[in-house]
Image 1 (cartoon, rainbow, N blue to C red):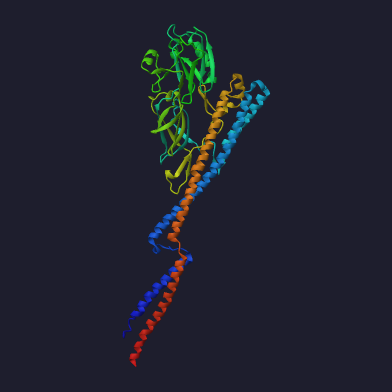
Image 2 (cartoon, rainbow, N blue to C red):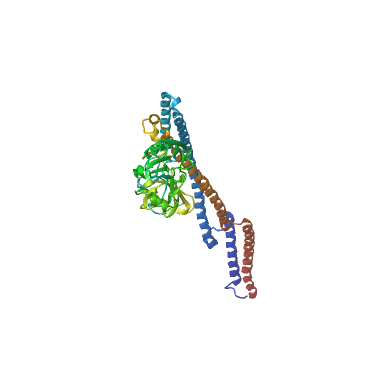
Length: 517
């Protein structure tokens, strides 16, 4: 204790006082900022995790905002489509009214045509003007662009969604594996003599459109049956033709449309109990209908390929689209997956020939891309195609050999009211309008499903994620005021005590003066 050059007790007291002062400063900083972590040294590992969570929070928060904006855009689009639906329904009413030609004057028909023209023009105007924040919604700018589509293989196509997965285009391969078929019944006309009716016949022809009866005399060519059946095709949905274009080869009765929704039924009414020469046949469900001539009746019946029957149902096409089995309905194929969703109609030549080459086309761009999650990946994005609803783009229906659209209902066009009156046939106009209504309604349904099942659920999920991430970040980063004030009090006491101890340590060295007397 007699050494004065080095005051060890003072050094120790200063060191502890400095630590206490740092602790006091730390507590004051946390209480003033409200944060437990203000710099890396406060909690290095905690800072890393906290910053990652903060980054996630920013992405999640923006994802919520993106979903909200997308919902507003979808609502705007759906509102415009609702007006288009109303206009289409008004056109339907006018066409049905105009078809009542026996009670409608020419002046009324002309007035109806004016209303139809005005409604069609309004539909096109809505298509061109509907917008959201400068983004055109219904003019086709949000539809997908295609290239390489062979019209001989694919007559109509609508891409609903496509994910390019960092590629500039998406290749689509369509390979028919099971042919589409019509409901078909075959009659060989007997053999003595061939190609003529052996007795007077009254036939009941039934199909998807309705039921009609026809009567033919005994001993007339099968051409007469063909003509009689085809005269009522619009009422039954069943048509007839000569096999190999030869009355001696028999007659085939076929549904106009393909698929399981179409059937052909041909029955003889009032047939005698014995000696009934009328018998129709159909192909076994597993058989492939031959396209070549001659039509070998005896061989087909002997092999069991051709069996007796008076009713036959068509078959839907089945095809692989990019390796996935698509849902068939007649000639139509539907694919619905996150990577690709489309609705296409195959040509009869391709849909009925499984041996045909794979049809390939490309989706080269377009569509609306919605970023719904915090990370820019395909799994957190949604693609949606919105086709144009202008009159020249909706209602595409095969009329004869030509696909015609809603615009063909305007004055002077092929399916206007005046043309329909001349033909005494309003069905083409009605079919086109029904297709247009179906297309707009389906689009509204897709938009509604997207808003309800994707956007709304995504928003709720992200909000829950945002709440949990915020709570986790708070645990890591926010200061606990109760704990910090307690530690502040402790640091204040220790700092005060350290100051007093340092004073005592400095005073202790002065005791050496007592040795000097």
